Amino acid sequence: MRALPAGVAQFADVAQARMPSTQRLFHYWHESRRNGVPLQRGEIDPLALRDILPLLLLGDIEPEPFRVLFRLIGTGVADFSRQDFSGQYLDELVYSARDSIDWSVCYRFVHAAHTGIVGTNALHFADGRITSYEFAIFPLARGDDPAGSFIAIEAYDDFDRLVIPDLRPVQRR
Image 1 (tube, one colour):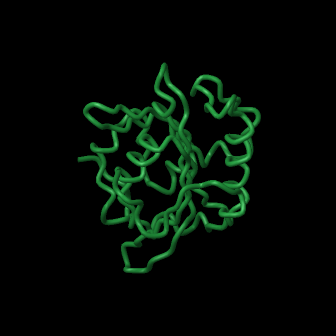
Image 2: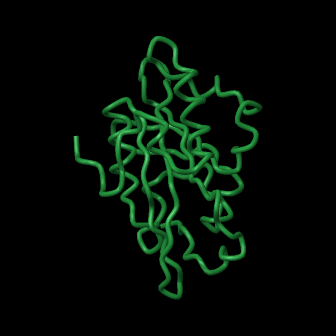
């Protein structure tokens, strides 16, 4: 298992998160597990997460060959990414000009370790400015794979939506 990127850690304690939305998802995921096994993606209660739904991503992790499918992304994630990539695979997207994180490494870790992660992603603007946001990825069970799906958050809690046009977009290959 490859090491996590700088600024990313296993998410074992809610105190590791600085954003209220990330803390909220941690509590929901942690309290929903049964005997240490996470929920199935279909068992997620959207009403329980209503206030953070725009910031969430749901998808599947396919182990062989390794691929990450984004089944649904929230409207806030789509806005800040400058496109809705629901239904797309991670390897079909180009994000390296915008994001500092190697997302494939993060999803591989979550799948292999069956645990959540939390970190900070530096965002690069078209004019050279850099800012960051907090993110977290948690495994969800799918069939007999305890980490075959995921729920994730991109915590844009303190972002001004007026900066969206200045962000480099996530692009399709």
